Image 1 (spheres, rainbow, N blue to C red):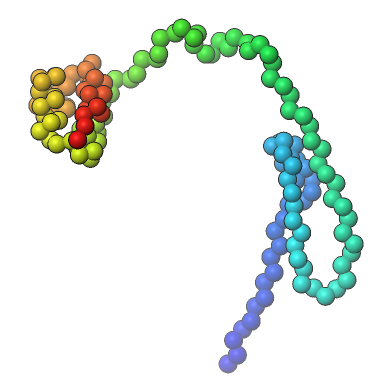
Image 2: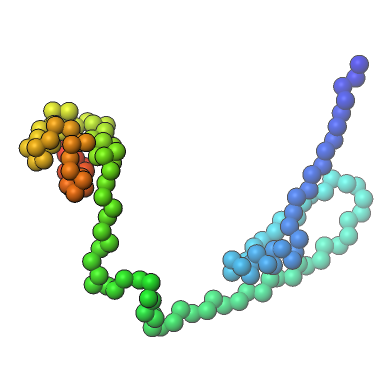
Length: 138
C-alpha cells in the first residue's frame, strides 16, 4: 500500500487597501514583502506599489486646558480603601516569604499593635500594620 501524499499551499497576505488603512491609523509606514512563487509559469512584471500617504501628526496645543475630571495639583492624595483581614494575612505571608522570622513578625505585632495575629488588628490600623510588615527585613 502506497502512502498518500498531500500538498497544501497556503498564502496569507493583506490587501493594499488594508495596509493603507493601517498606515493611516498608526501613522507609520508599513513595508510588505513579496512571496516567492515556485510555479514555472511566466510572471507578470511587478508594478511599483503606491506609497501610503503620510499625514503629519497634529501638534499638541501649547496651553493645556483645565480638565474637570482631574484633581487640582494641590489636592490631597485619594484615600486608600480600608484593607481587609485577608490583605493583612497576605502581608504576613509576604514577610515570611522574604525570610522574616515568625518571632520578628509576632514581636512587631505585639509591640506596635498589642495583637497576637494579623486578623485581630482593628480595621482602621490595618494599613499601618501592612506597611510595617512590608518594612520588616530578614
